Each structure stands twice: as structure tokens, then as C-alpha cells.
Amino acid sequence: AHPNVAIVGATGAVGVELIRCLEERNFPLSRLKLLASPRSAGKQMSFRGQPLTVDALDDASFDEVDLAFFSAGSGTSKAYAPKAVAAGAVVVDNSSAFRMDPACPLVVPEVNADSLAAHRGVVANPNCVAIIAAVPIAPLAQAFGLKRVQMATYQAASGAGAAAMEELRASTEAALRDASYEPRVLPHPYAFNLFSHNAEVDLETGYNGEEEKVIAECRRILDRPELPVGVTCIRVPVLRAHAIAMTLEFDRPVSPDEARAVLAKAPGVRIVDDRAANHFPMPSEAQGQGDVLVGRIRQDLSDPSGRSLALFVAGDQLLKGAALNAVQIAERLFAQATAAVA
Ligand code: A2P
Image (cartoon, rainbow, N blue to C red; front, side, top):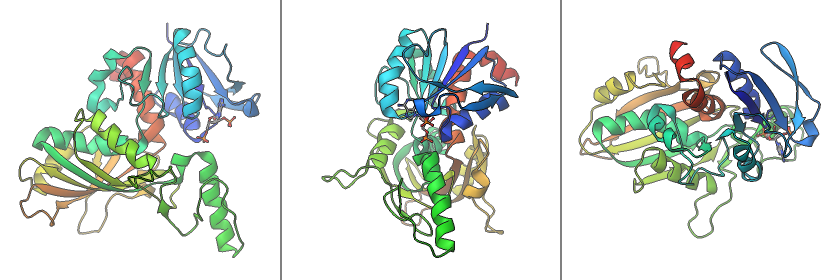
């Protein structure tokens, strides 16, 4: 029999995409349960053309549930994921609650699907930047040996949830009318602006929580606990796709053509690298698609040894950065045969 599936946070930005990914990928399931906060109880949504009513999450929510996607924040995951596991479900958790827990595999299926087998009930879906970065970095690391990673991010509103996306729209409309707009969700004016990521800043190191996650999770996904990684995370006024400028230093000199050849065969990667047309990865083209776009593949001129390359990548934060990656994990857990046929 196919699994009974629950989505915790079904009404959120990622939750809505989870429902769509399950539909589009024809995920084999018997029943789907939509769960959210009491504010959303009774709300009507739909799945495969059938109306579905959202229930408030409670202790009995996981009776007869085999697979639970969580995307309702870290606190909800910490409180309810153990209850779901106790009720017999496997949890695929999109929050940061379990990502550094050695008992919970942190999985990007193209990169480290083999780590899934060791799960004890909870599989962690990585941070969106870590996923989008790992998809092109992993095959290059495998081919050439990776020494160091340096990144700057251009992160969309969607990473901060549906309310932040609405704030970007509303504040932009206000700015176009010359009206004032008081930020409610994000700490700074968003329209025609950008700012350092809104995660809390460590006063000692100067790094914010997003940067700390990206560094720790890239190391864990790539299985390189000591890998030197530096990152600066910036929120930009884009709705739902992240971009990353990255410089990768390898163990030996690597030409852009060699890297292109590896990336051309890498699962989950689409090369967008048309120098003549000045056409490279853009959020507007990354959004709505599952692949990570990779381009601007060129030598890093600050490293005369020829061992460093610069790349620009873009990926849909809500899809590969969150919902799609979670559903791909679930396919490996529950629906491998079906996914292989599809
Ligand atoms: P609700 O819509 O009822 O507030 P986003 O990331 O877009 O902000 O979405 C967060 C998701 O998590 C929403 O579906 C939200 O439900 C849900 N959520 C937030 N807090 C809780 C909670 N305490 N229990 C269950 N679901 C929650």
C-alpha cells in the first residue's frame, strides 16, 4: 500500500510547493493530511483536483501517518517531529532543528543519498543555500578535489516565508506610489534595497546565523568536516530564487572547459553560460524549475596558479532549495521504484 502522508505547515510558502511537487511528480500516496496552526484550521486547499481541509496540528495528527513533511519552523519541528516518529512516521524536516544531529542524515539526493539508509526516523532537508550550492559543487569536488569555497549570496524573500514575499510586493507597490511603508516581517526597507541577511548576528564573529548554517551544512553534505568555507549572505528584492557567486579552489589547475564538461553531466544542474549573449543564471529563469542553473564558469584571476574557478548559480529557493529536495528525499525513502519509472 502507498504511504499516508502529512504536511505540517501546508499553508506556508514551502507547504504550498510541497503539495504541488507531490502532484507534479505523481508521488504515490494513499492519503494526504494538511496541517497548520489553529489559525488555518478549516481552510480549504486542494490536492489532485480534490478539496482538502486543513487541520490544526495536535498530538493526534500523526495517527496512521507514514511520512510527514515538516515546514512550520524549528520550534514546531522540535516539538512535534518526535511525536510523529513515535507514531510510526518517517519525518522529512525542512527546518534547521535536526540538521546537525548526527542521527539525522542531511541529504541532497544528487550528492549524498547513500547517507539516507542510516536514518532513525528523521531526515533533515538542508538550508536552501546549502542545497543550491552543493548541487554544482559536489561533482566538481569529486572530479578535481576541493580545497576551499568562497561564496556571496543573493537571497530571495521566499526564504523568510510567505509573509516576507508579501512584504516585498506591498512595500514595492508603496514605493512606486511614493507612500511610506513600515517593515513588519524583515528588519529593513525591502523595496529597491538589499541588506545583510536578517538572521541573528554573532557579536563575537560578525557572522549571522544563515552564514553559520551554510558553512556547517555544506561541510556536512559534502562530507568534509574541515572544508574551508567562507560566505556572505545578503537578502535581495527577488521573490523566490536565490543566486550565489562562488569561487572554488581545487587541488590542481582546472580549466573552465573541464569544469563545464563535468557540470554538463551532473544531475540537477543546467548550464546557462552564453558569453556572447551575456546570458547567465538569473532568478527569473531559475524560478519554477527544479534544476540549479550554473554559468559564468571562468578562471578566478586572483589565483595565478589556475586552481580556482568562479561561478554564478541560481536556484528556486522554494523548489530545489526546499520542497522539491524534500520530495526527492521521500521518493528515495518510499517510492524509489516509481520514481525510477517516471
Ligand atoms: P499558518 O498558515 O496557520 O500560520 P511560512 O514559512 O510561509 O511563514 O509558513 C509557515 C507555515 O507553518 C504555515 O503553514 C503556518 O501555518 C505553519 N505554522 C506556523 N506556526 C505553527 C504552529 N505552531 N503549529 C502548526 N503550524 C504552524
